[in-house]
Image (cartoon, rainbow, N blue to C red; front, top):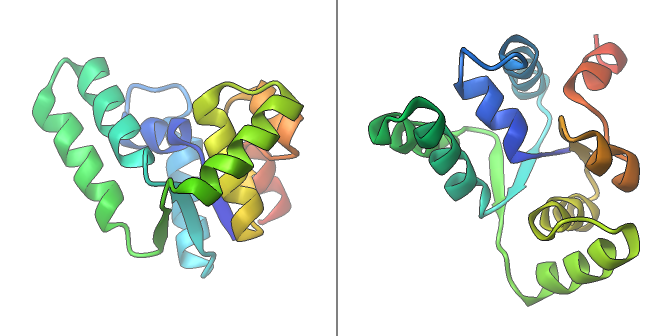
Length: 138
């Protein structure tokens, strides 16, 4: 079980991103390996807006958000009072940014490993980068 940070999805949807190849490979391998994937439900908004902004193309952002929502093994974790309380606890203890705390809390609540390109988030939450996950899961 894996919780995937928005930056991994964004890289996978943006061929110009330096992490595109590794992100896309990691997501394909995880999906084909029957791993359950999780993300807080804000991920769709984050991904759609980031892709749209990067490409200066609203349609590209909408398409990326739609692909994320339709992903066959991704389960969205509702940002409710339980997730927010866990994010508040983890975020303040680990000195995380607000949205990062939601991803760390989603990982904790689902019992999954957090996957992110954000080195600070990975080190403070005990997560892995996509590269590290691929090495551990050949």
